[in-house]
Image (cartoon, rainbow over all chains, first blue to last red):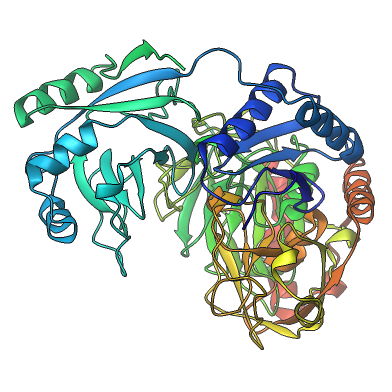
Length: 243
Length: 338
């Protein structure tokens, strides 16, 4: 489907959706995140939540405080002004252990792609990913930027639950799956970094639009980093990325 | 310290407050009450903030006692069977639970959820700013799970309530589930006009397999005009998605924050509780309204909750003989409190 003009859609009387397209595309994501930033910098009273996704921004609002038309006008004005994202995206380096027992589905991915396990690790760790959105589960980060050679379809039926902080691929995308649950994705590793920790002062630290790289570590290092993370010392490294 | 003790709780009985807001962008479900209006009514009747923590009682039922002192309670339902030491009470009632007395709530002929508010604050630690329980991700409430026998809920700043039980009069909770109002969209363009008409007209039957996450409808399947897979986007409570099998699924309080099926319409906020209360087997259809209509209905709801909930003393003529026999126990409340 071709990408037409952005559309403003109602989802009931308490949510508006600004839809920029219908596909997974970094240019569409940029527009979503730019609008998200602009509204976040100066939120109108009564705007309750902003939910960026691949191709739209959902705005939950209290219609008894914020009039639908006022919000719509604000959004349309920002979109017409072609707001751009402020600043450069943050680049995070996440340690990732691909070895057994963490990369438990690597053999299956090797079977489906024809790549060796070593090549799978090198390819996955050699790419830079964009956080398109969170969804599905707390802190479940959908990542774009998976090299095409690793684009395996998702499983026809889910596999048993994976441990927390699994690094997964499927359907042409990559993800970090924070919470154990059955999944149709392939588990190729695990990160000791906790993208989501409800008890931590900053429960989430990676935002939509941020970039992620994975740095291979062995099991011993993984265990040591997991202990540091548990002691409250973050093991994800933050760097300023060049846009 | 005053506490409410759970003597027994069926599956699906959880603590809920107004919901965990502000974290949808990180994939955190808001949770909160299935019937927001009834939840707020229970809190209003108990003199609490409207979004305070209550016990959401499923059709699995609940039995509680008070510990440490008398505790004012508002238990609000539609047609649930509520008893105090075996004596029948109205389905929406304010009373004082004295230590040693047992309040029991059982499912009735209609309704799927009831709300027990205490006069005071159920003192459990909020997670991400809310006590709402989301069992799927193990967040909120008591360790992210449903309530169970033996749980003890400390009550901060407890207040005793009515000396004798009072019937709560909340006519706004008398809601007919047969017609549910919706705003069409956001993906109604995925359906041809005749399919929109078929969706509205139904009739649909509420499937018994619904839960806090979703309400499933059975009926004649709808067809999509341009496929049933969309790139995931945000999902509001009440969003009606139509997956490949053509049978609508209405996403409720425990829904995921995003989803990948076209959403033909969205149930308006004031009708979410009406829908949530529909037991399996209920037949319903939909009516399309404008956003302005929906906002007007919201305003009317808010206005209904501005004033204290009217109440009448429970009088003997309302009750069956077994209750009359037990009345000396109820009358004893005044003596016991002196």
